[in-house]
Picture 1: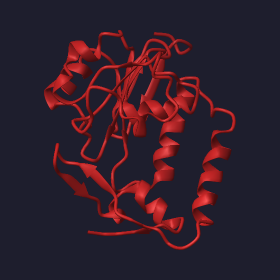
Picture 2 (picture 1 turned 30 degrees about the vertical axis):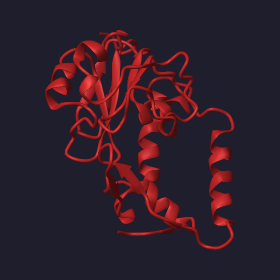
Picture 3 (picture 1 turned 90 degrees about the vertical axis):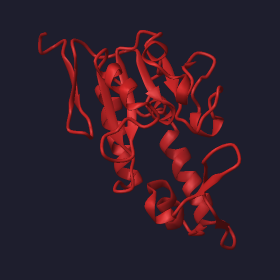
Length: 206
């Protein structure tokens, strides 16, 4: 492995992912894949969590070109063979703390890491959304990516629309807990919900 051909990235678990050359076939957790796409990195495949179904959740996929990005499935449908069917040379996952790969069974994650380099970005409660974005930007740059033209301007415009919204919308954030149940989120605990509160949205706390 020469200095010119080697690639490495220190993830948020403190582990160094290493490859003989810069990875070009990235498998990513769905929202991680959507974020990398904003930097011009098209994942060859994406996977969901136990909250997702047989089809990718359009609320999570952003502007990903789903006609050319293979959705591997989610939850119990995921095994190592399914995850590796597109021959990825890098897996990008997220963690909500403690370094566990979100959306994957621990045994599946262990076998996956034995087959391909894995980078985990922490998106948990201790992080600000800006810091999460910085880490994805650092990873994207290491993979040869750069911000897609207009993406930053679109985000700034969306934030300004929220700041200028008349009145104070009251929002309760939910996430699925099964076919007939949902979790009510404590907004102060989640980076993206804290940003909404900072932009003037009244977040209802259960």
